[in-house]
Image 1 (tube, rainbow, N blue to C red):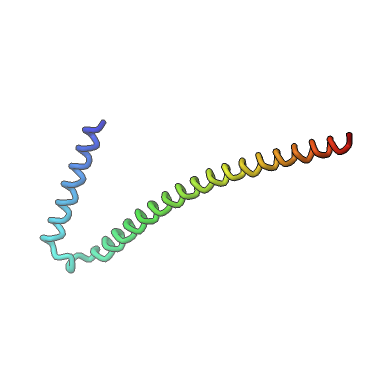
Image 2: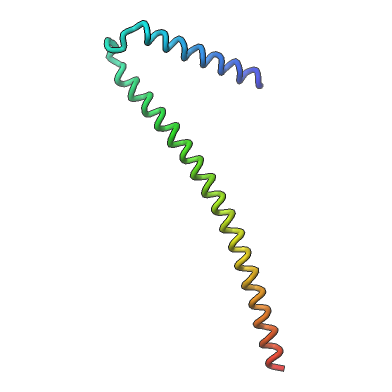
Length: 95
């Protein structure tokens, strides 16, 4: 499995190099599709950046939800303890 990943990365690197050589040999100004390729590259980078930001924000939200749950448990435990104290004081006062 690990070897396959390495092979895939090697092939992707080779493809990138071939594309770069092709663009270097051909004048991009003559290429009528160059603006569209540039736009596609810009959009791909924006998409990647946005996906990373989304992942960071989801992780942050998860951490905040956990923190909120802990705080809720602490508050709930304090309320239960206070309620027990009030009950015991009320019971003692009535006797």
